[in-house]
Image 1 (cartoon, rainbow, N blue to C red):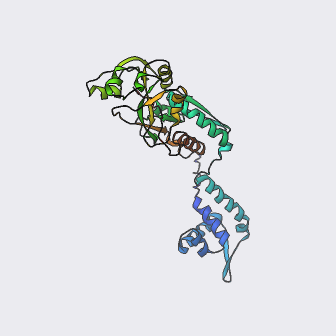
Image 2 (image 1 turned 120 degrees about the vertical axis):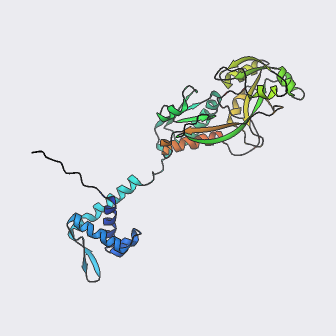
Image 3 (image 1 turned 180 degrees about the vertical axis):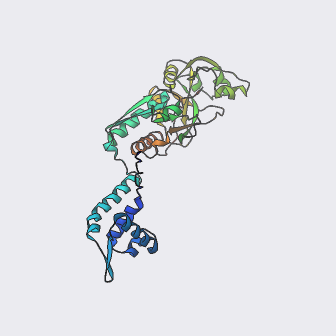
Length: 327
């Protein structure tokens, strides 16, 4: 003889919620109002509960209804089940950053990482002392790396189009020329011809010698000389501080707050010069996988990045690197 296992009973959470309301109110009408349903629907639910539990649960005593001994025994248990369901199926509670004990991994260009690190450490020290950060160079394909958890957040110029990735734009920037103190370009008006005649360093992770500036100069029948290509802005700015090469760096838009990404340029003593021609704007954003959207710790991380890269509005200043070809 073959034994056939009977299927597990279907658990209806609505029955537990209705039972809790009935045992708390001792009234079909009041229980129906509590659950925003009709008395007729609640009466049918009570009948179903009586069949399932094989007990009348509430019986009439004059003008009121009173619980049976079985109902009295179930009252606290039913309330606890409903509280557990609320905790399980309700929106997640906020996370206290002070209780976080984790390491967040971010991927960013060198200048973005250099600007983020001091601000993130400062915020973590005040709000989340158990949090540490790992900032990786732009070495991974961001979409898959976000998907499989190798990085928690990508910060920079978000150029991949993975449809599942969540992207938030943080700040718009412009490109400016950075030169050492006493550089010939600091004397007199900066014209496109003078800019093109100077020697340049290009920042490109892919080793490219040309970029948007070359396109803009070509429209004026001008061509610049590129002496060297470097993979990051920090190295390019250090070279510009020790030689006559011109380095392009991202800067805040006119009227925007100063950006923390100018700190290294200022520390090197570089002069930032407005370009005498128009280049496409640069937008810095952050990207993450949607599974982290509602996570309390990740929400704190995203808010911390916002606060570091989007200071309160103030006077104009210089700003961020995007990790793409900037020259």
